[in-house]
View 1 (tube, rainbow, N blue to C red):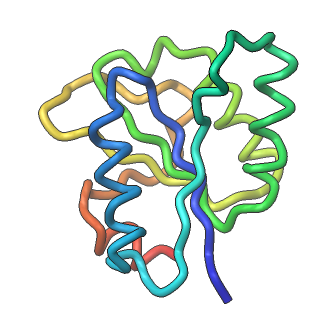
View 2 (tube, rainbow, N blue to C red; view 1 turned 180 degrees about the vertical axis):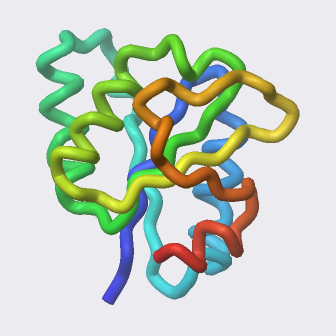
Length: 125
């Protein structure tokens, strides 16, 4: 059975999102593991449209992973994704983007931090 991760991140941390996606595609997170994330829809979306795209993704995953960069704590969207994940009783972890020092959002206060490497993610699936 394949496992799926929802990766929450800010656009400024795109290169680290890509690294996690690459690990999945290379099989470093386990066989059949997929990483979902919010993708550019090619046009501006309303808040309700964005929520409509994200909700089913989070509902269907085994784990939610929050990528914390320098300004993640100021993102209302990431805070919303964390709260939605908690309501759905998802396994939630966060990891610091390499080379960044921003604090995690308050909503992650009791959520475990994991190291930014494929083995840390794989061992929690």
